[in-house]
Length: 375
Image (cartoon, rainbow, N blue to C red; front, side, top):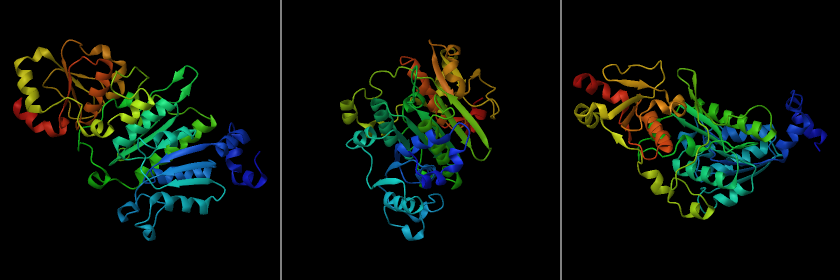
């Protein structure tokens, strides 16, 4: 039952066609775990509290730094040095005193992940490291909890809804899109790579939007799809992946296995086979018939590969066009910088574990000069 004063707060939502009292009541009864109180976590927390999610657990181990202030908008200069989770929770309590929020000043890890996730209805990952992403995903899969994923990198952001339970089974999860982590030091953090302040706000709001859709049952959540936004070009890209069988040994299959799984080793070593341009050319010039070159960039991206036989299969179409790739020869995936080609190798090997596939190190950007000289 929604009291009159509560009704007044959420009247604009309740009046929406298809929303109503029932959807608002679901939000008020919901318990959500938000992992991270940083660039993504701040807008997620703000908008879910404002929407009326009744119970929120917020976990973050970090303290506020000056470099956070341009994007982590719950904090000010006076908060520098204070625990993010505590400061964010106190700010939300002032803005929305009827919301029950529990801050936890700690890191999520293999010791506490089950207890934290088991008690909630939905998990939202606002973390910035692969250890946490894989750990949280695996725990959500084993505990059958939906997960809202988001990430940012310089001028691009991604969002998706994982492990959502439908009438015909669960949807895809993080490992279906990223079977293997990137190489060590390949993806720098925000302090090294930089980030434009508005981007995590946009992605965080999208995560909050997807959470509201999942909790209330309105609309169609973003499942089996990874949505990528390029803020400079104002373009959206979709990568669609259906659930598939994860090869044995790639992820924990029981709670006990998760507790003993070595996430630091898994995430700190490159498991994606790569070839430098020089290595590729040495092998290709000797036996060109033993290689198939696959360009996973979008069709509009330049420069095109024109001097070698190359099949263009955008990453967003790869899972649906596997039959165009030979099973009997080595496959070299290329892209602009080497990142998407690594993702392509991971997806390809998840479907053909015994195949031979490589990512071209550095992509077209680093290889164009060498490419022109060699050919």
